[in-house]
Length: 140
Image 1 (spheres, one colour):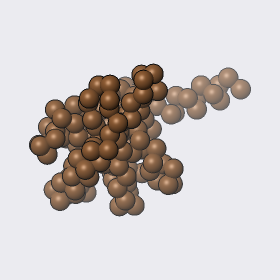
Image 2: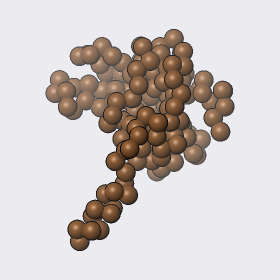
Image 3: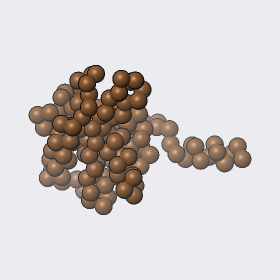
Image 4: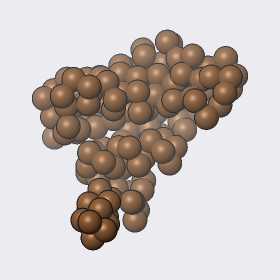
C-alpha cells in the first residue's frame, strides 16, 4: 500500500534526482523515483543528446537501473518536472512491461501532486508481452 509518507518520499527523491538531469537542448529537466516491491527506490533523470533519438527519459533510466539490480516488481513511480508533465508513450510502454497496476505520481517542481494514476490508465490497450509470445510461438 502506498502511504502518504511514501508518496512524499518518492516525490522528494524524484525532485532531488532532477537536479542531475542533462537537458542542455530542451531545458526540460525530469526526475523519477521508482519504488520496487523489495522497498528499494531507484532514481533516474533524463539525459539528452545532440542526436535527439539517442536521448533517454528519467522514467526509463529508473526502470533500467532497477531491472539491472534484479528488480521486476514495481509499486509506484514519481515523476517530477517543472510543470507536472506526464510520462511519454515510450516510458508508459516500458513501465507496462512490469505491471499495469504500478501507481504513477506526477508532480511539479513545487512538490504539488498534479495527478495520481496507474500505468494501465495511462496506457489503455497497451502492446502486451503476451502478444509477442503468442506471435513468436505461432511462427515457429
